[in-house]
Image 1 (cartoon, one colour):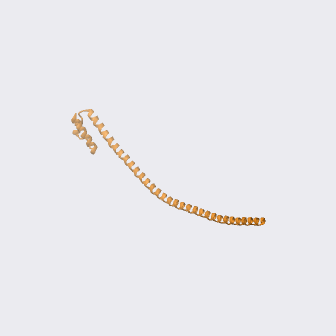
Image 2 (tube, helix red, strand yellow):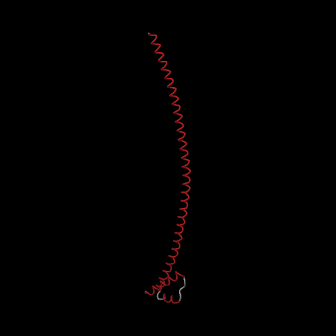
Image 3 (cartoon, one colour):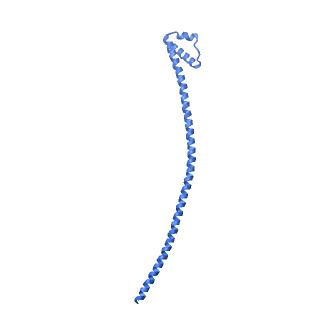
Length: 145
């Protein structure tokens, strides 16, 4: 029985490697029993299915690897375009922020000028009123005397 198994393995190996047809001696070895011949056929079918499955598996793996490569390329392109877009956006943001700051500072400086003018005008009016008050007080004091 052990010899029959070894013979079966050799036939399967030979069939899987080169697909050679069996010679007369091998057929005689298999002729030892119907069960052995059936087992050999089943093993051959299993090996052929495994080889086909293996090829299909390799094809599937290759397909996945290609998808990974395409996806990686897409991500790389997106990163580059995103960097460029954010760089441009960053420059525009910086310029706009500086412009807003400059405009606001100019507004406040104008406000300061207006406040100084108002203060100077108020000081002049206060001085005028104080002077008028002093003259009124002085004229009332002279009348009473």
